[in-house]
Image (cartoon, rainbow, N blue to C red; front, side, top):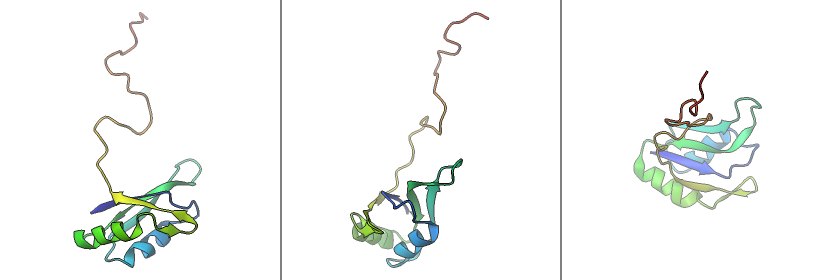
Length: 101
C-alpha cells in the first residue's frame, strides 16, 4: 500500500521516515519529496508498505502523530487524477489562442 505523509518537518529525510514507519511493519520504500532546483524538502513524502494490514495500522497510529515537532497527516495515497500535472499550463484545445502567424 502506498501511503501519503504530509506536514513533514523540513529536516526529515528518507531514513527518518523509513525508521518511523518500520515501527509498524515492513517498509518497501520511504521517500521525502524535494524541490528539484533547491534540493529542499517540500514537506511531504510517500511510504510503500507491502502488507496492507500493517499499512492500515501505521496510518491509524501515525496520523496526527507529533514527529520532530510537527503533527503528521497520514493517509492512503490516492492516484493523481489524469491530466493534473507537473508544471506547465494545460492549454486544452485553445492552441495558439486563434493568433495568425
